[in-house]
Image (cartoon, rainbow, N blue to C red; front, side, top):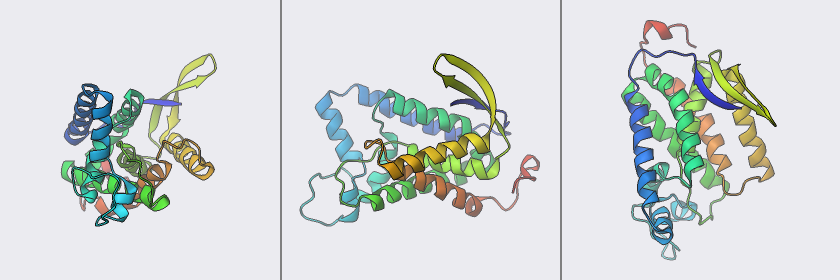
Length: 230
């Protein structure tokens, strides 16, 4: 099932959401201009390497990053491993991010996005502290947005493209179902070790962090359209 759009209107222009999408797309276009060796160097210099994060002062680091290890967590959120990686992340951010931004406001949403993204990478690092492969992508931060959306708008309907062999159909699916299934897939893959190149624990960590932190970040006063939200 591929989400296409939700039926959850917003009251403000999603400035931060669109800005994040534009920044990710711009960085990916820059990645496309690089030859393979330079692209690999870029990823190792700006990606978040678990070993570096656990041993930031070690003298035997295999890769020296362009930024202090902690800051690479944030730079890594703008790098992607391919077009599908970028497209799927930006699709989910576009569908679900505007509503969470509308609820929190631009500044709170900006902070929420990067803090949940940081915690998502931390979850991945704790799952494999000696890994030397860089973690890249906005998936962890976007997982945080999905977790927040699930808490805020579980009954919102999401237009979803349902694919089964040769059957193509657009159906309305409650957010609680499609996001719940998304989270279940992450847990099952993490538990089975499936998809070694995917940071499943970052997705899980980001999602759980989003569910918890949305209660911390929620504004004291909310617009009338959000009064009924838990």
